[in-house]
Amino acid sequence: AIINAVWDAFARYEGKPLWKLLADFSPKQLVDLVDFHYIGDAICADEALELLTQRASGRTEREAHVRDRGYPAYTTSPGWLGYSDAEIRSACRAAVDDGWRHIKIKVGRDIADDVRRCAIVREEIGADVDLMIDANQRWSIEEAIANVRQLSRFNPVWIEEPTHPDDILGHVRIAQAVAPVAVACGEHIPNAVVFKQFIRSGAMQVAQIDVCRSGGVNDVLATMLMAAKYDIPVCPHAGGVGLCELAQHLSIFDYIAVSGRFDGRVLEFVDGMHEHFVDPAVVRNGRYVVPARPGFSSQFKAESLEHHVFGVSLTK
Image (tube, rainbow, N blue to C red; front, side, top):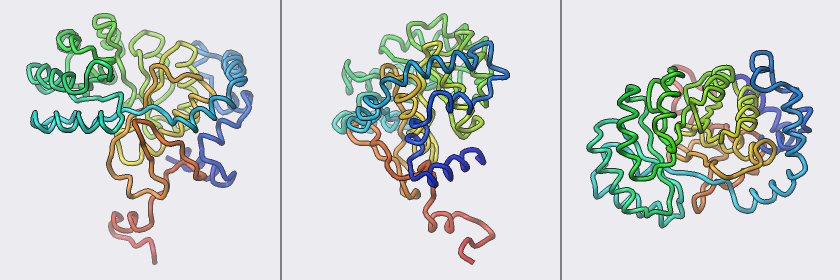
């Protein structure tokens, strides 16, 4: 939290949104932000510098591109557990009408119900819209393998958090067994060292970094560099209050300066609580609008803070 707050203050001082502040750094300046001490066996400073230098030539064009088109997003709004069939159908139709091309639904409560719900979603969104499924750690390894094989008929892009988030070896087994369905995880991974193990072991095919769960912007940059080297798409977790606001900066920066790619990369969007932020995340036609206000888009409105603080007044 402190590291992210410092980056917010730095970006405001420079008069730039955080993504732009980072994207304007030279490759050497970016490398200097990372502690390679425990990840040097996966990527060293020289390798990171070479990778970033290679990407530097197209930064201007990619920045113009993402400003014009926005960053690809996915929605979970049609996919919450507990919706009736009619609610699922209505939400799916509304999402497609609003321009969403990537939709995620929750699974894991009951496999028969998961199959039925996935069938409804696929029927409503059609074959051309990407479908992702998220088990939120509900399954054992064997359950995950068996259940994803059943759900693979609906052509999901990934299975998110199929089992306990600390079980690297379990994720390896699942990934090997359910391919070509990708395994996506990372929202509970606390640092780049653990990400290194997931990436190098083949336990994940999609890295879902969380800038508030990890060590902040610097730690995220370390993970992004490893992911870029090993060709792992970074699709940050943004399913919480303020995470959409923060994660958009990371994904935009990743596209401009680190990965240089959109393919396989899509950022979560949850439509809730944005009214509490001075600079809320905005999505149009299934894409994040690039933020222009200086900072990390993390500033709460004064009235929201006052309303939710207990035992102390912020205005006295």
